[in-house]
Length: 373
Image (cartoon, rainbow, N blue to C red; front, side, top):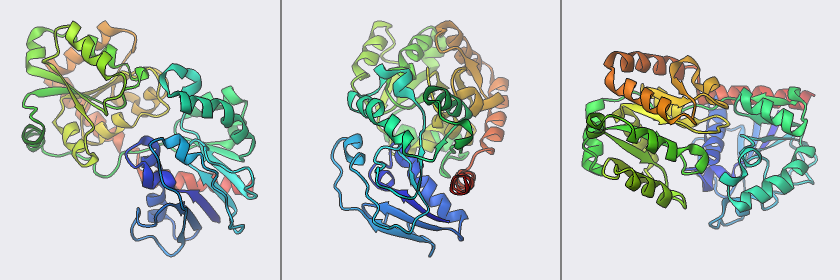
């Protein structure tokens, strides 16, 4: 097969979900495939080292601005006609209408349609105005969970047999490490001395951080004294609301907002944490629970959308609207060392079902099916 991939997000937006997905997909295809030929369209050719001979790059002259969706929406015109399939990983945005080969997009989820109030106006406009035209112009869709597959098929009346599921995975840096050394590192670099409950993810309202803060506030005082709540994520427009809620509940000294944490430090936070709590209202996949599980960290997650599919029987599941239930399960995990140990084992077992090389192999199978359809 001769495959073209829009690789711009892998270089420009490595820290985002879509950037990480694009980077890991190309890197893992390079790991597992020596037979098919790939042409990667990218602003620079150095973002992945040691590409095999069946991988070529073609430079795109473009400079990123501060808006991901403005940058990536620049039409990516293919001058190379010798391609059988062109893959646009960033929800199809940037797919040119004049591409003559077969086309596939990765559509991670349809959050802008389900929860429009939780995304930027710019992204919502692109999603509403352009996605229907993009879907009319593509021969298949890759998505990241069976939940998203069903959601996409129903919403757009897109043939389910043309939607291919390729689950995501934790990167290799996420693995079990010494809890004591991880805590020492975090104490030295970030000044967090206490044990802690962890949240990792965006600050979008759909992540339910208000619910998490309220659930934490209901813990017995003794537990709040012993365990901080550490919230990792780049502080966005919602930060003030979350900080004010912690102030209103008189727990501002117990809730730590770290802001952005470099990716190389994230495994240490997961390993140092007592439990990851992920009470999101909506996820197309949900990487933080898998990253935590790969580190052997217990997980409490919502019982909605894709999260039961991703976490399976390895997490404690809660109704994200039920603050009392969430607080109760956090208390159970913090108070019961035997339960934590059981959850550690389940986390490690579940995480072994996911790998980026498997994602790449599933993607190759999708490419073959689309080309042969």
